[in-house]
Amino acid sequence: MLALAPYIAALGLSVGLLVAGAVWDGLWDFASLVWMAMVVACLDHILPEHSDAPDEAGAKALTVGLALIHFPLLAVAVWTLAQGGPVWNWIAYFAAAGLYFGQIMNSCAHELIHAGGRVRRALGRWIYVTLLFGHQTTAHPGVHHIHVATPEDPNTARYGEAWWVFCFRAWHGSFWKGLAVEKQRQRRKGRHGWNRRNPYWVYLGGGWLAMALAFGTLGWAGLAAYVALCLLSHSQLLITDYVLHYGMRRTWMGERYEPVGPQHSWNAPHTVTNLLTLHAPRHSDHHAHPTRGFEALRIGADAPVLPYSLPVMVTLALWPHLWRRVMNPRVDALPRSQTSMDTAAA
Image (cartoon, rainbow, N blue to C red; front, side):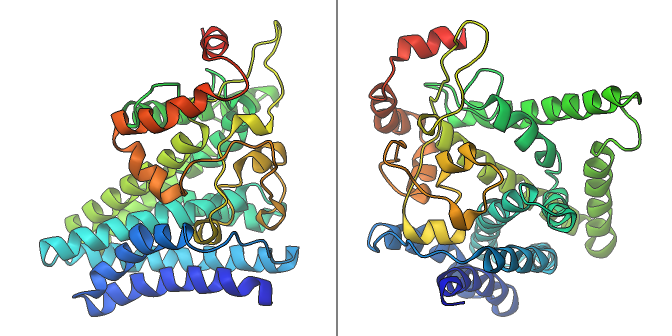
């Protein structure tokens, strides 16, 4: 239980500040944004790396509890945004909610769709569905994990590619490639690609149902707030992929690509971000062991490490020229030449 305390404290504060902004307005609208966009980044570079992790049972309880909080908290956030208010307060709360659902809840859903057990995987799937990103449930394990660091993976950023270009390509590519995976699965079982068992019916139908609920309860303001919040959350999910795989390429070995190794993901050891994102920045180990719970992930000595914490790197990614100045030399310094990467990608 003691090992869970730092996670509960960091995540509980994030949830509490979003609720406080919804209830009390005023400066509370800014509190969550200041916490996630500024305080976390500062603490990441002050506090020593956190090594204690909960046991498997504690980790499961944490992810399930966080998932159950997601649904009422999403409703509260949409309701709050639909009410309007002073422009800067609204923008601050919108940004904070986007960071929470795009970074924290994406990490929780990501953990759950990799988990064993139908209930936990269903919770992860429905988190993504209610964020209008249900196809991630298929595309992440079925496309990204298989093709990571190759040209076939839409969620691996190319060397020199700007975030603004990557964002549309990754969203569009993951949706259609995930759909192709599910249609092929149906055909292998002798069914039509659009058989009712194709989970894309749930991804799309659940999303439309959620939008109808937002419109039915809060009108056009609610629908607009909901869709806008989901789109901001998508951008946060995708920018994490951009940062954690930028410039990575597996070598083509004549008939296939080399196996996925620790050198094909960037990592970040920083304490508070790892608590909030359930060790998602320990990314090399996750790709090596996709079913391993977050509590068991480690950063090996041979894993590439980002120069700054994830919140700082995500901010840098919004400025392509600055991003390339920071990251391109680090990609070039990895133990393979950029020429060979470009040749493999061709």
